[in-house]
Image 1: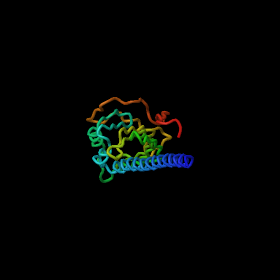
Image 2: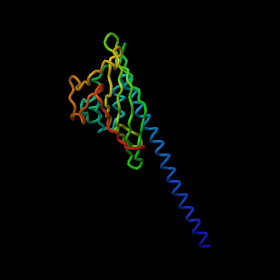
Image 3: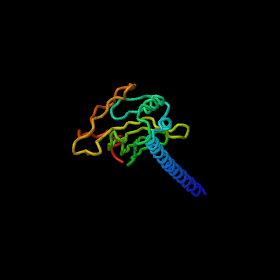
Image 4: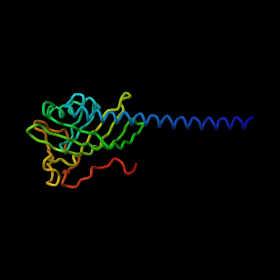
Length: 206
């Protein structure tokens, strides 16, 4: 009888361990989808100049750093930065496609990191038409069951005039926004194409 009880206890322990493993796997999958949707939502809001909606995706103490323009700290500063970008309207194109995600999640801590490629079509009638491509290395945090952007860092890899292409070089990074100063200086000094630059990876291997 004691052998039977021991076997049952061992089997119960095995089943409990398996249940915990599957629950962790399910939670990680659910978190992956939540983060992917969050980042995609950011891209769609930016496309249409919905700056308040984009800012609402950030944690209250979240940060934003784009194209070497310095770091903006806090959701309201992120909102202020976004409202200094061109308004969406007639003849304005501002597409930001979020592609190629690599996401790593710490389920227990409720944090994650993600690397994305953003492909951009930017311009306005009678003014400019440009192609762009950037690498995002972002941090995320789960707050009250919802994922939010804790740090959005966009490294601009290439920005070129549509009619000139990249064989003529690229547009230099705009290092500041008129009428707005960052809270902190850029975390890294770099230049986009034709200068070679590799945005730091949050991972070594997958």
